[in-house]
Amino acid sequence: MTDRPAERTASPIRPYVITRGRAASDTEPLAWESLVMATEAAFPASLQPEHRAILAHCQGLLSVAEVAAHIGQPSSVVQVLLSDLLGWGLIVTRPPIPPAERADVTMLRKVLHGLESRL
Image (cartoon, rainbow, N blue to C red; front, side, top):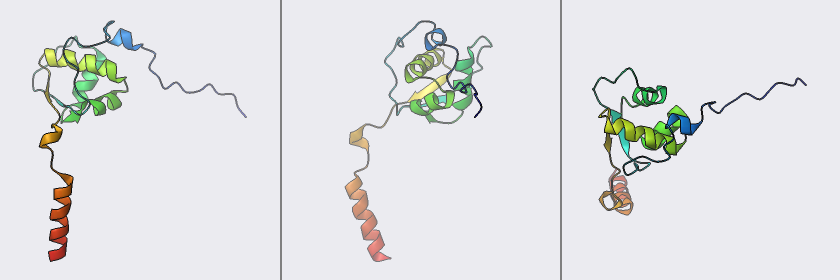
């Protein structure tokens, strides 16, 4: 057996450095299901690499959870970074659909069974 050091999977940069010491955003945090998308606005060259990574991934609609997974950062860090981008007008958000507005699954099943019985 060879003694190889374990491959490092965590970033050497600590989360509090990425958020500049902020533990939470100044605004209400976005829900995990909220969708975010980059705007057409040109972004400044002074953005942090993490902000740039978010903008690169958000060319289409992505949920907050997907953004966190793509850039490999904890959800609390992503919440702060998204809050920054939202405040700067570099992303737009769409809140999740409230449960009352979602389609009733039992009704959809009845419709599906009705259509299947006619085929």
